[in-house]
Length: 271
Image (cartoon, rainbow, N blue to C red; front, side, top):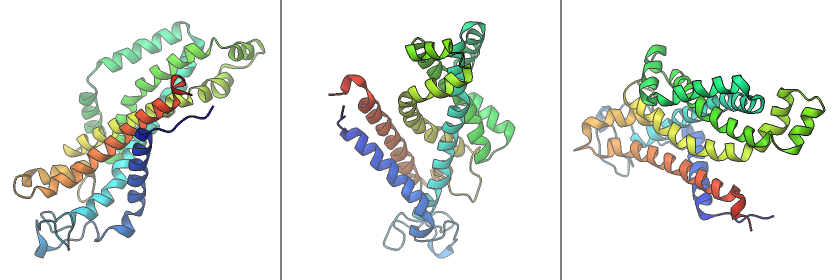
């Protein structure tokens, strides 16, 4: 049955694809080197020479925002990848097996999810040391329980399907059933969840970078750029506004993509 693509999905996909292309092409399309200092252009306002103005060292803000798209998006994708790779197989396995293992895993998941996520992320990142890699690891580990719960819920429904019961009767191993039957059939729900969670990952990574636990100078990263520009927000408004808009657009794009995919993949919306 052919599904009709909706405007939300188109808008979200367009924004995400554009951001990824800009991040990949940043070294070629950025007008200046991101760390090139120019003392003659310190805190210059937006103009023909510097479209988004310059910072306190005379560096071109547009160039730094374009180059900052790479670490910002890479960290967001890394956070979600860690959550998916660790959480989905565990949740599918627990939902299929059930029993005491499932009960114990769910109590642990509920315990972790009851804790304030940002506080735990701050503690983990501070313990590992401020860097983008450690930031991605800390936030990725915190996202695992959400994927465990999602995959477990899907597995509880799928394990009652005839093909899963038939596979068990034929002696198929639990790992085979998870790989062959569980994971492929929960792919649609997983794609929607990943798209929406990417929005939260961008915001969380930018937040920790904003307070100094992510990208370190002189690395250009959206959250770190907003932090650097907050001192000048009243007079040199363009400095924090441009990277802040980049964070906003990225979060909006992933949210629209997730909402559009959810509507598109919803069986009730099928003609």
